[in-house]
Amino acid sequence: MKKNYLLTPGPTPLPPQVCESLSRPIIHHRTPQFQDILKEAHEGLKYVFQTKNEVFILTSSGTGGMESAVINFLSPGDNVIVVEAGKFGERWTEICNAYGINCEVIKVEWGKAVDPLVIAATLKAGKGTFKAVFTTLCETSTGVATDIKAIGQVVKDSEAILVVDAISGLGAIDLKADEWFCDVVVSGSQKGLMLPPGLGFISVGPKAWKLAESSRCPKYYFNLKAAKKAYASTDTPWTPAIGLVIALNEAIRMMKTESLEKIFAWHNKMAQAVRAAVKALGLELFAPDAYSDVVTAVKVPAGVDGEKLVKTMRDTYGVTIAGGQSEMKGKIFRFAHMGYIGEFDVITGISCLEKVLAQMGYKFEMGAGVAAAQKVFLK
Image (cartoon, rainbow, N blue to C red; front, side):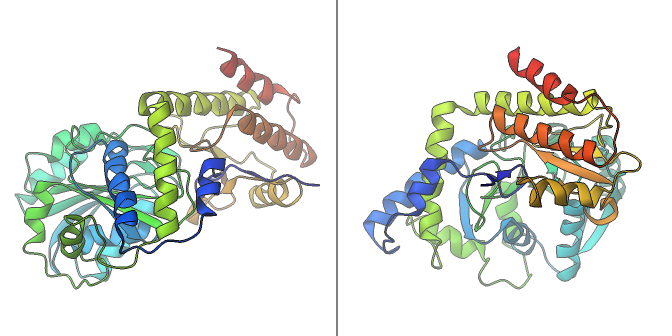
């Protein structure tokens, strides 16, 4: 009987406590009982986002949070800066274009991180005309982490708000929303928060709320003014995903027990183990200078069919990693190490990768990757 291992950058495996909470009988959401659950969720999200601001819960994927971050603070014809360093940076541009917002795009080579000084120069050239800067904490399509702290320092004294897509990074790598001057942070449930897909989250700071007063983008379901009014009464404007919110509290309790500091350190160690294994197998990291502790992107070696590699690991052996997206399809594979993933999940994944690479004719010393990962875990 084949056992399945999930090593993708979302969705990620679910802890037993979360699975159990999802099986509980449903309750009604307009009740004092659910208000207590919602209040705990609001406070727990502030802990994870490292913010004192409201964090709103949306019944959507993370992309719903991204759309909210555009339509609630901007108007058609506004000028914004978008950092495109991969597929999900491009998504900011696509959403802005859908609402008639003008994008000054900073194109970054896939596998590289944006230089905060380039953002600073672009802001200066705009002479106060830019309303927002959109960027990504972890560009999941490339395995690159962005220096949000440095970008926050660049943006904080400008007229623009800093909007961060932290969908894949939140809860796995550090993001101090308030301390780093992030005005809006967006995330989702199915990554570092160890839940199924279905919840989007968005934190909003004072600078962003000022922009919201003049926003003329059409909005209804994702109207954050309505969400803020309901939030004040520990309520939601629309029917929430009740079971997922209950599960969210279970996940955040686990995170609080462990502490964010230890969680970040553990993700770093798993990432080190994967990177060490990759190098021991003679493979090349796709982003060697700006890698993320969330997911490691690896170049497919010459002579190996990248799509077949991913498919064989998944369909034959039950180990699911992710392939490349868009222009990187078939050229890279992505090995995730976030959320409810442990040491032996990583070892199993590396072992399966070795087996399939050997079957596909790639030459290396069998067991070298597993040994390299084990050495990191033994430290």
